[in-house]
Length: 270
Image (cartoon, rainbow, N blue to C red):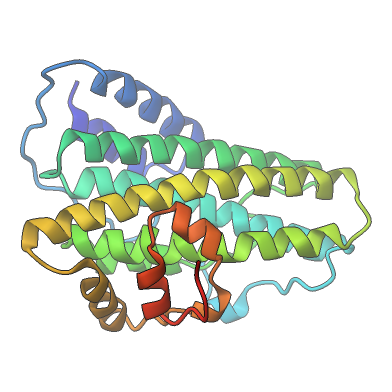
C-alpha cells in the first residue's frame, strides 16, 4: 500500500464514503507488523475539501440559532455541529499526512480519531436528513481549516491548537448545549440529538487526551515545559483561554491537570 497516497486521497476528497473506506483500509494496514512509512513531501491544501460543495462565509454571516423549538434554529445548530465533525475528520487525516516523521502510534491514534469523527458526522447527517436538509445546504465557515493551515509546519503547535484548544473547547460547550436542549419539549429529533451529543462528548475526551499525549511527547523531545509552552502557543495564535467556560471534569479526564487549569484561569479545580 502507498500509505501517504491513500491518506492524501481521503484528505482531499469531499466524499464521506471515500474517506471512510480509505480510513478503515489504512487502519487495517497499520495493524500489520514491520510496515514502512516512506519519506515524502505532503501537498499544501489551499482550500478545505468541503469547499467543493459548501458555501464558505465569515462566522458572523452564519445562520442564527436561537429557539430550538423552531425547525430553522434546530437545523442551524445540527448543521454547525455536523460541519465541525466533517472538519475534524480532515484535521485528523491532515495530522497523519502532514507530520509524516511522527511514530506509527501517532498515525494510528489520529486514524482512529478520523474513524470516530466519520461516525459522528454520519449520526448528525442522518438527523439533518430527517429534517429535510443535507450537509452543505447551509453556509459554513473555514475557521478550523485556517488553524490547520497556519500550523502545517509544526506538529507541536497543531497538537496545542487543535485537540488541546479547539476540541477541548468543544468539551466545554457540549454539556451546555445538551442542558439547553433538555429544556425544550422532547421531539424525537431532539432526543436523538441529545443522545448523539452524549456519545460525541465521551469520545471527544479521548481525542483531546490523544492530543495532550502527543503535545507532551513533543515538549519532551524539545526539552520544553508543557504548561508554559502551551500558553506561549495560545499567545502566538491569539487564542484566549476561556477559563470561565471550562468543563473541569472533562478536561481532567482528557489530560489537563488542576495545576494547569488554574494557571489558565479556572477559579477552582479539585
